[in-house]
Length: 365
Image 1: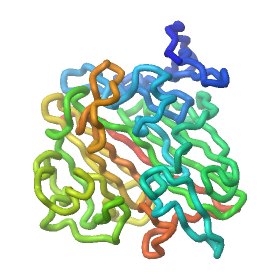
Image 2 (image 1 turned 60 degrees about the vertical axis):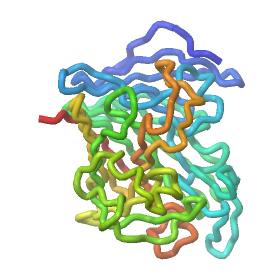
Image 3 (image 1 turned 90 degrees about the vertical axis):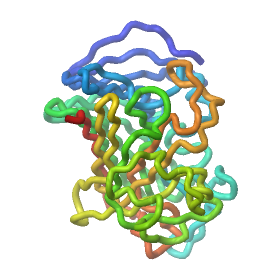
Image 4 (image 1 turned 180 degrees about the horizontal axis):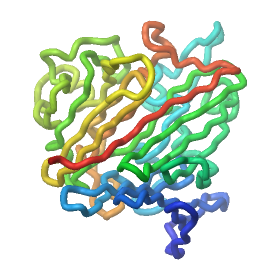
């Protein structure tokens, strides 16, 4: 499949659409582009809720795409490392793809060594979502994606009904994601978004300065399954003050060696248990771009793009090599269904799941 060149059609409230191709069964894939009128725009398709582009102004006022993507629908239909996708039913890893809920054992699809990652082989990032503009978003342009995950899909119990909203504020350069879900049977749920950010728009991200307000992180074993939590103080995992990402990646720290770089969960030092709190701040001096991530989630997974090997080419045709982008995935803890000491990810009938994450963009003074 290839992306078509059908002319763009403008709809209401700063949203434009174009044909992006067709699924193998013939269903049309549409790309929606949201523009907030302040220089911020986002493009997304209804395959996996994939964000194909996110254009953000720099210090010079010119907007550049700051997320990695693939050239055509054909590449997105092939296996890829979750470029720009909604991830679930369970973001991150569940050890051996097994957990027990209310006394009933469940076996999930294994797709990451001997473990389950990001919901299995056919997680939410591979699914066809319904998508439509939103008319009830005040001071924003927005689209909403909807998907129903069947009972037993990838081994997860319960029929799960999902709505994910992308909204660009028209008052500030902010991209907000709202996740909502309901189930008809007790299940586990951990939703996130898997964008690979590069504020420079090219090259590697090792010169980006990162701040993560977290005094603890989750060390991992050789399969990247959490071993518990540990203090960041005195380790390369201390990002409580701004630090260039590449500053300590060459350290022979056992956790950097285990993951080939950073691919760990940071437990946020939240000032309050509820509401939005800062999860990360990313800065790029040359372009002046700044991104702050605020979330209702208890943790964030920082992944430094360690497994990008140049075998895939980005939307601009350049090979995507190690460190071409980084992920800041707001989330609950990995393997929480097997770790009662971690915050619960259980969703039950009659409960309404809601999680929100904001990406706030600015420029350095």
